[in-house]
Image (cartoon, rainbow, N blue to C red):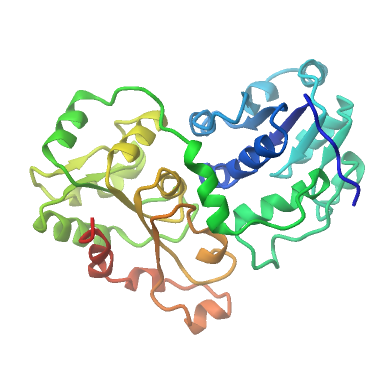
Length: 340
């Protein structure tokens, strides 16, 4: 494959889905800046993920795709043209975006060959499949960089070491939370829900873990949206060292809270991935069933610990619905935090 040579050019990355997916795309931006220091990177994301994308200094400009969608078609095309993009990489395939990018006559348009609409909209189509691959999601994103010179897909260890530039925003947390953190020298965040994006461990397991952590002298903060908090708030332990932050934080503030904490426990969801790349002691709860297994979706980071109930679960091996994740014992999670 002939490689594109980039100097002082503009590359656009499109990933308009959820937080975890976006976090696992950020290493692509770091590699591009290392490979081509003079380029400009524009990241097309969603309103919800903009706060996460903005934490990576290698990204020069963040664009909320929702704002573009509100424009008439011709204005969308004109806006894309005004950005003077040389290479547009569709990490998350979306037919509408691919069509507009072609209409804007962006010279190099990269998208997987496994999306039929890319044959009409992309002029560079790397041939790989996510569905059948054994690679991690972050590694799979690098398959789209082969036209830009990457020949060997990096290991997860390599990718994790690149993410040290990701920094939490410089904003203040609500005073009540700052006070709690000052009174609890070791604070663990528990994020029970996933907005339906992953199999969950179950609120009763989080409550059991919270009580175990409290007995050992840890501070515990439950995190989540207001809607999520309504589902379990009444079960949170009433304890001076346990705090319910659900519905009280913006995404920016949640990132700061994760950065100020000692660790986080969650299933395969956005906060887990943020915690991992911030270097926190991160415990991820997973099903071994493909394609939702940790081999594909574990968090990046050098202090990430993965838990499944049974890696050889026969039901999961058959890719059938299985809830074995709820059988993971809270004591096993506690063992990790006894070390910090």
